[in-house]
Image 1: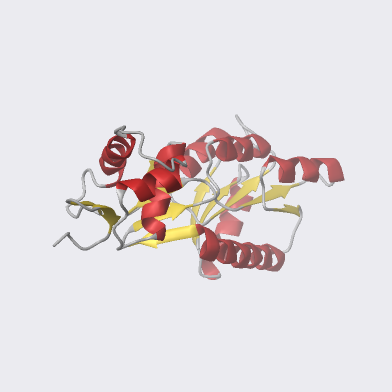
Image 2: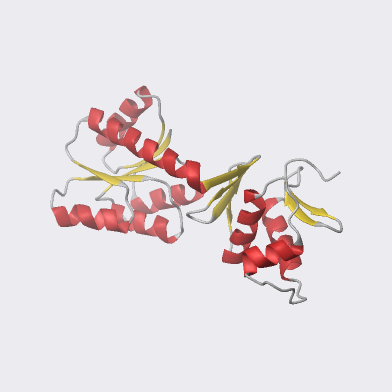
Length: 227
């Protein structure tokens, strides 16, 4: 797993990093909350391990900031604060688990494995994948070849329908019904304009276009070109 460890104590950070690398993980270390928030928001990680007490922005603030940006990366909070209300605050902010210091590395590794299992199960149901394009149905964020793509609500629903029916041609009427709940044709350019916006986000900068217009029929998403 690619893990971001946000811990200001260098000795602790180096120790945990070494142990996690030995356990087979790839670890990036960070010493303060603001830098950690920026890294977690702009880079792809499978898990975040965040200390509760951090300079510039505390761990709960980091969690809240990430969840406000619809970033659903699993988070384990490390805390020296043993009070129940402190732990509850972290969980309510959006953390997936917590571990009270001092802790045994075996327990941290076990908790990481447990979060990984839970997240893998959720991803089986909530991640759509077509080629190098994925769509997280929980966060409504797309990712193509490692590039995060933010979507507006209608753009998400339109891309979701295309990906749920990957390889199939969806007519304009079908898209109006499934995305806009129109059971008649209002004679607008809603579908066309939104397809154009999604193409700009999904295909621009890539050699292979994924969203295709099938003339006289409709649209489909596929890694194969339209014949």
